[in-house]
Length: 173
View (spheres, rainbow, N blue to C red):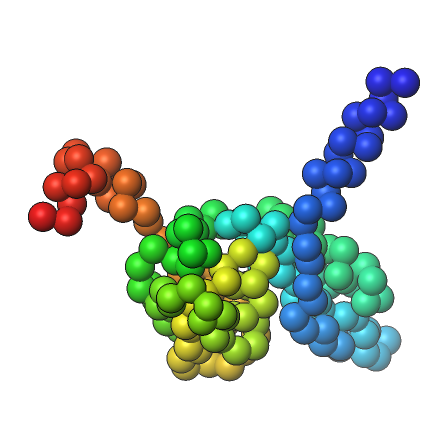
């Protein structure tokens, strides 16, 4: 009886994670007998409460690749501090390969102004008001990683005040 309860609880924890497939590519590897086909899936996993991860999975079939991508995304989670207006605390830039992403906080009611993979990452992180721009590469994997990198480098005012060993009210002075 106790085992059943544990199983349902773990299922409830799993359901608050959302996953979105950003891209599925059919890739080939040339081997001695010819070409070996497989699929690569780029998946973004998030709980819409500040945690998001970008994962990549490769398998012989699409479903297997997506499953592996979800598992990889959960391994590479980043924590993003959100403000009361579901925005980010300060402007930030992120880098992933050749892709650069610039993000700026926005006023409530603005919405997510971003394109492609960056939009998916921000939505699954729980950000509701933000301005973002992809610079450099338009590769979805590198842009998703750049967005995750930018969210990971965010710091709250209290964290900055703690690092500098000063009270928060002195931070503005």
